[in-house]
Length: 203
Figure 1 (cartoon, one colour):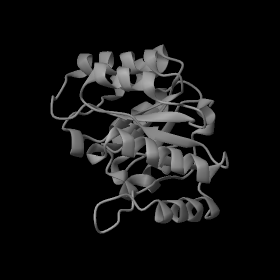
Figure 2: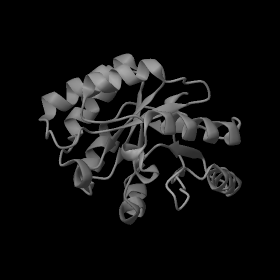
Figure 3: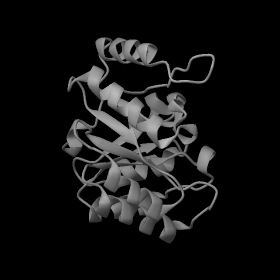
Figure 4: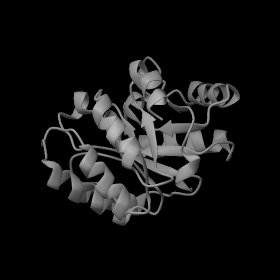
């Protein structure tokens, strides 16, 4: 997928469960169809709202495959592939079937609190290993680590498959710096509903 196609409104799908803890695939299919029919520009599977961190590997594969089957190529599908174990993410990228997947959304490492050099090498490794475009996900409120504008711009400039960043830092100055200096075709997506209009005003 080309970087310029990652734009518009993306919906991060939840994972519906039955009361006894198994995934409700019927409801997941209905939800996916509803969102697509509502005019969404792309889907995000296995993101924060999907409760991906508590899903088993088999459950993640089943959720992704069901969403891809229902979507049937109608809109791009981005999948969440992130964590605080860099090598673990790189290894997981080798086992994922990317047919029908347009890109990955990779959150900054949580708990470890890496510095900017650590963040750079983390995402460098992911970009080198990913067969599809990569969207960085900066959400310090959940991870306790902020991907600075300088680190974002360095990564976007050095790696052609880094297609954008989902920004939820709440720092409009940082976001403005990224928008102003990013390479052509790299998208800046709002990850904070309250700042979507201000971010649109910034460009």
